Image (cartoon, rainbow, N blue to C red; front, top):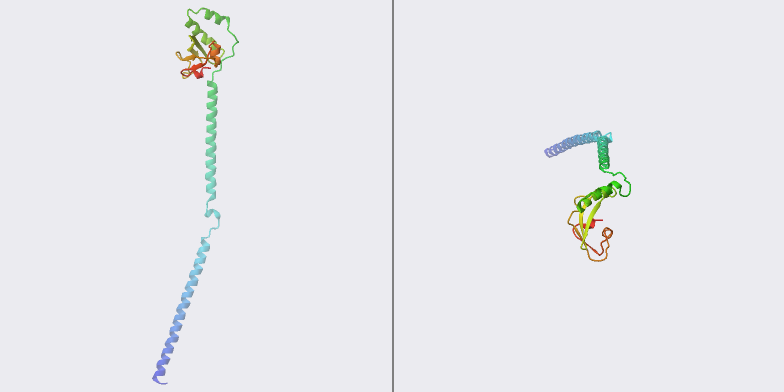
Length: 196
């Protein structure tokens, strides 16, 4: 073997050693990859929850909803109790007049007979009328003009206050004016549309 063959053999030997070294390194890297994959598989399996409650705690939601239901029921009961109490109070506050005999009594006639003036008679008449009706008004008719003189049983904002006038100009179409002998159409002034 000459020197060239020795050099060539030396290169071949270096080539085999290099190939063996690379194979050994690649085998080591492949082993490391397999170990890493096995570790990842194990970590994924360990991370998977065993119970659905670990993902979404539905039991806590159910407990919170039960508390809200109980609170809503208590609020509803309190509101119903308050409404019932208000209704009872309103009912108790409603004044019911005792039923009186129809007609005018002798005592009432004597009281009216003792009146010294027309206004005193009319002032005495109103409470007597209130015993039989919820609201009463005394209207004064003068020269075709019906004027509210006084009233009883009306709230302050309803028309029966002295000075409000009903003017008649033609055939009567309102029962209360007809009851007082007014003839003609009624022209309302003020809040007289609440009169009857």
